[in-house]
Length: 222
Image (tube, rainbow, N blue to C red; front, side, top):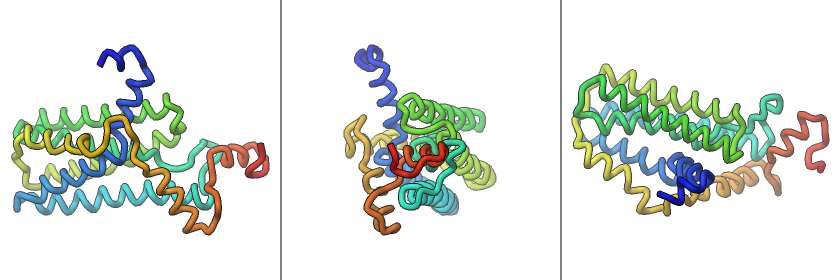
């Protein structure tokens, strides 16, 4: 803990790790399980899978489109949704809501809002670490907030789960046992390989290519 306080970059890396796909995708599966186990909330589990799946599909499509074909928006430095931010804004509000499922409506709403604030902090860490542009973080946050917000709006009209907060917290923390805290999942490398195979190229497009296009320079020029 002292190391994190003395080294701001280490603190930022710790914050950003909570948005890593290696951590959050297993968490999304736990959310599905907790909603799917009680018969009364299995419909909610189905809605979560559909909404979260749509969000992930949009993230994936935007990244592959840029890496393989260079499809982006040069004017706003946009190469695709920030996956860390989008996943965080999708999952952490719902996770907070589940952890407080035995509490009253006001507490559950507060927990969901705090989850969204945490997702915003993760998005900010991506900016400070120069991993994404402001447009990519903002787009990711809006996408993720739409996923979690729509799910919780629907859930307000559906049967409500009553779960042990301790069991939920312990289950949501299990990804830390599978992935060393602070280490990133090899998602980007896998996406680059997939993009090259789909596009039939031997290299992926980079941000430098996008900025070169904005400046009117040939792609690949120094």
